[in-house]
Length: 96
Image (cartoon, rainbow, N blue to C red; front, side):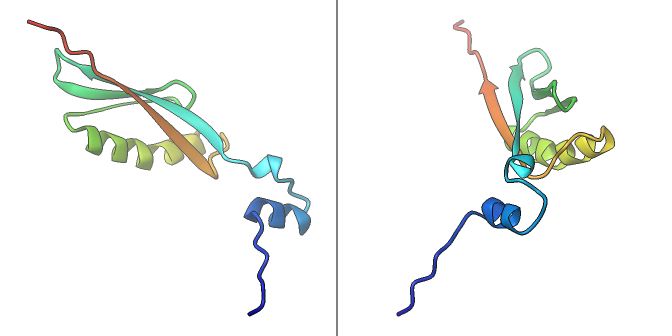
């Protein structure tokens, strides 16, 4: 059986064009997700994008951010592909 050598698509692209692997490496945006006890909603904040969204459901909020972030970045002419979103969630539960 023949052996097939696989390589990174970034490396393959950089070998056949003027684009370097570093110039197309994904950019990571950190999304802070906090629970707002008073409003009873999750709030997503990303200062680098800029983005602020809220939702009563954590999963719905993550999906809204995933859809909105590329659009906002494109409108602000910031690089957005490939795009990595890192979600940092925090919910403090007080006793009592």
